[in-house]
Length: 116
Length: 114
Image (cartoon, rainbow over all chains, first blue to last red; front, side, top):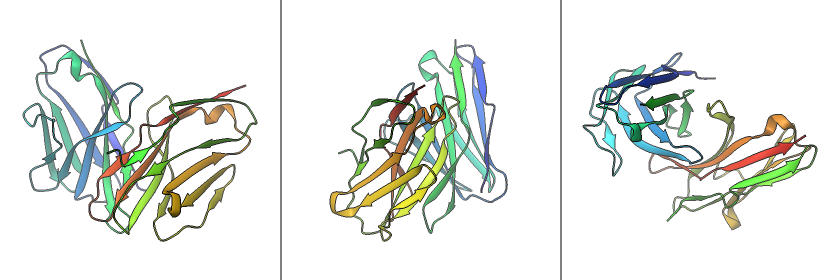
């Protein structure tokens, strides 16, 4: 099946720093990728839809300037958490849309961000 | 309104028991897709099944089986003879034909006690 990777898998940073998370589709091209956020014992919440070559579409309540998304190529989308604070600590998961026929998304393994 | 409802927050069963995880969905689209994912403690989502709205056949894969009933808008998941390795959070999700967004349920945390 299609493989999506995320890097890093875990990151611990100090408050005020920026953190970049990469999401790569390894064996297919993805014009559309998604970024989710998951707090402990909660469901996945869609943050934004990342489209290659265009601006990301953010869900209501998600700060665009806080969570910068860049989808510069058909295999890479990045999420940058700018000026991170402890409340940004969460599990971030990306996914790639492989086919519009079934609307199927393949998920990355997730990145656990801890902001001290 | 919640598009996907998983009413069971937590379930505990003893090993070898059967367990059914409920999923009820809501959509106005005639074409849609339903999914089940397993999320073990590591956090990585594991794809279990995809079902499109035109295929109401129930499916069995080893100890796993799924019951899709459009009349009740339900897509329930049964694990037969549960094992400790089945302990995880299970998510049901809906994707509508009019968009490609996934709507996740709140998840059911399953604990299988040895």
